[in-house]
Structures are given as C-alpha cells and as structure tokens.
Image 1 (tube, rainbow, N blue to C red):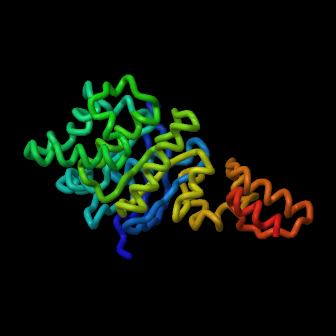
Image 2: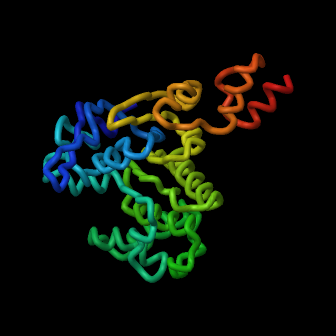
Image 3: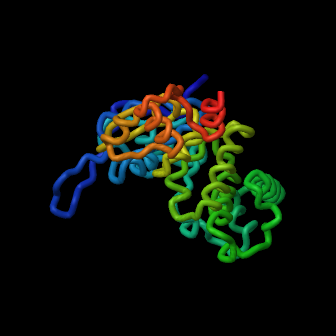
Length: 277
C-alpha cells in the first residue's frame, strides 16, 4: 500500500510576543497510507491541530519536511495541488459555510476552480448524497443542526474530490447525536469511497473505528498502533492525561479484580459475549 502523507523530522515552533520560542512539534516521523483511517489523540496542547495543519500546508515546518502525494509542502509552487489533494474540515462548521443555501455552499469550491456548470452540479449532487444531505439541498444552512452543518462542511470539501480528508476536532461542538452523524459519515467515506481520513479528536471512543491511533504528548509521538493495541495500555494513556473508553476501563478493572477476561475487548457486545461464555 502506497503512502499519501509522510513527515520526516517534523518540528514546528511558535514565537510569542516576547520573542520566546516554543516548540509545538518535535521530531515527528510518520507515514500515512492511502485509504487509511488514522485518529490522532492527545491532551490539550499536545500539538494535534498543529500537526493537522501541516498536512495541507496551512503551516510549514520549522524543521524537517512534510510530503503530500509526493509534493513537499515547503515548496510554494505545490501548495494549490496539495490543498486539492488534502481537504480540511475544522471544528466549527459555521466558519466554513459561506452561502445562503446548502447546494450553493457545496458548489463554492468547484466554482472557484472554474469548473463548467454541469460538472459543478454533478459534484454537488454526488457530495450531498455521500454525506446523506441531498434532501436538504435548498435549505438555509443556519437552520440546520450542528451535525447537519458539519456534514455540509464535509460535503463542501468532498466536492473538491480530495484523496485525503483531514478533520480537526469536527465533533467538539456537537451533541452525541451530531457526533454520531459526523463519525458515521466519515467512516462511510473511508470504507466505501477509499478516502484517506486523518481524524483529530479528544473523544477516545471515536478512535475505536480507526485503523490506527497516534497519541501525541508535548509535541512528540507517544504511542502509535491499532486501537486494540493502544487501548490496552491504560496506565501509559493515563500518564499523559488521557482516559480510555468506558468498556476498556471496565475490562481493565475486571482484570485487576482477578476476572479472567481478554485484554483486547473493546465493545459492549464483545464484553457481553466474553462474560457470558
């Protein structure tokens, strides 16, 4: 499987008003494969959003380098193609919605690319269908729920036909129903359309649908592996200020109490089946 994003020795420093330098990322080495679903977790200030912004050249490395589909982000000539390859969805959908109807908003990106009207219509229809919002095409975005707005924001990026979708805490402002809508939509795009997903979140349970979990701490890679592997390391996660999903916590407590149960149980159905057997 070929890679779509690679970071080598990536470091990024912010400079404060008093000229003090602060490294938000240090020595990040990472390869992300095409079609992979990667979730990035970490405590506040760990560098999650900073890392995400390097993957479509919103930020440029202070040290090392990042390549997107073989294009170095530090080369200014590459940035337009990089941003077409890797589309970004932010935490607050209101910051990405610019039009008075849903279909006009989704059409905004393709129109700016100068596409023919017929192709724009096809792309809008396809993108809205993919996120389950086709029946809302003539609705005013400000009348939608938070989860629906975020799905429209995702459709606006999908209409640009990116190979990679980067989501920076897309459910942070949503209620549980909205969070489920967005996560289900992103999972389907990954599974059925083969879109690479990089999903930044602080909700541990959202990481359970991923192929791979990356844990950041103080700008460095702390852990990197599959969800079942990562969530077994309860004490290491707690040491960096993270909790684990409730079922994983219960399994850990049962094992501490002497109950014989597999360590890699992650879902309620798996727990019921294991205990009943």
